[in-house]
Amino acid sequence: MNTRPLYPLFILLILLVAACNKQPIDVPQAAEITKAEREELGAHLLQIIRQNPGSYPLLPDTGAYSTVYDFVQTLYNQVTVQMRLDLDAPPENRWNRDRPWQVFILDRDAAADAFVLPGGDFFITTGFLKSMEQEYELYYLLAFEADLMHENFLFDKMISAYNTLNYQALARGAAQSNGITAVEVLKDTEDLAFDENEVRQLDALTVPVICETSVYRADGVNGILQNDTEIVNFWLQKRMNYAGRAMTVTGLAEENGACGLLRTNGAYEERVLGILE
Image 1: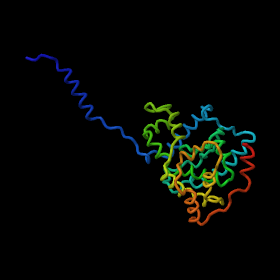
Image 2 (image 1 turned 90 degrees about the vertical axis):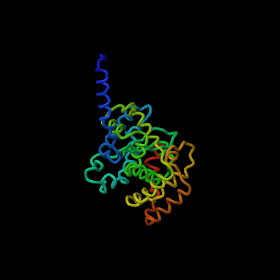
Image 3 (image 1 turned 120 degrees about the horizontal axis):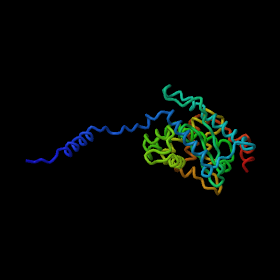
């Protein structure tokens, strides 16, 4: 007669049943991450930037530099006015109208770079500001980056690197999620690259925004493309060019009724270049 105890077999059976009944983790799709959660994620990433001045040296919004901040912020408010209202979205999933989309200037002269966080906060380097000459160039850049965030290009690209559960945890203030730190997510967000097809789509979205919100020429990216300064243009490396881009953007502007004629009124020279240089 077999007198061996049956306890090990009983325990194994319980474990097998539990494993069979275990439900898979429900990972939300990008569309299920609300705009409020994206704003919270952006706020958490902004906090990390503020806490790391060595990696993210913010130009102080004081003294003469306040003039630069005011100028860029005013243009950014103008270009994003309809996006922030978000009238095309369901009322329960719109951007918070009471939360401003802020401009931050990074004290980096050696690089032309710009990026946007989930929720709309915009970052640009002093080197990029110095490399431009006229307001219509900056206006295009602001509209392009705002569209990148508002039209979900940014978040769709972000979730190709990490899943949505990671972002939800970080949005709630976690320092890390499943071994992924918020610092890593911030750096990856700053360095996100968009291919030629995505940039084409964004150009097509950007031109109408400029036409609807300003009297500037809608082909300001052409000035950025023609820039011949020696600084590294990281922005153009991440927002990849395509053949005939200048002609394409000019054509898009003409399709929108040749909107706007203004390239500059001298304010950029006085309120940006005259202070930063």
